[in-house]
Image 1 (cartoon, rainbow, N blue to C red):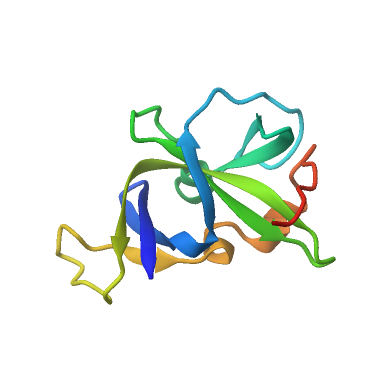
Image 2 (image 1 turned 180 degrees about the horizontal axis):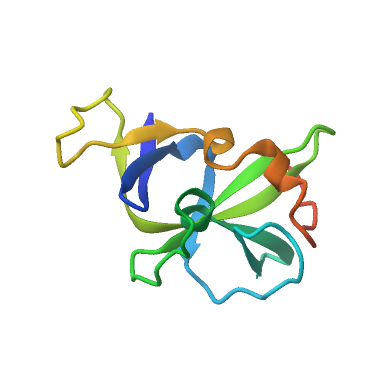
Length: 138
C-alpha cells in the first residue's frame, strides 16, 4: 500500500493512496453559510462543487495554516444510498507518497499512523455539509 502523508497538528498521518483521487493546492475557497465548524468552504472541480473539510480544525481546533505544503486531498465519500461524492480534505504538510511497510517506532522521525476516511471525518459530519453536489461515480 502507498500512503499519502500529511499532518494534523503534530500528528503525522498516512491515507491509503487508493482512496485518493487527486491532490490539489490549497485553493481559495468559496464561503458557504451553515455547516459544521470544520467545514472550510467549497471549490469547483471539473464542474462539481466540492465541500472541503479542514482536518486540522476538526481534530485540533485551529485552522490549517497556509503553508506551501498545505493541500486539498480529494477523495470520495459513499453515502448510505450508494451515491458517491467528492470531498476535499484540507491538511498541512502534504509532502509525499510512501510505501507503508508496517508500524514505525513512535520516536522515529519517519513515524506516521495510517488512517481511514471514517477515522478522519466521522460519517455523520458529511450529512451536515451544505451545498455539496453529488458527483458521478467513477
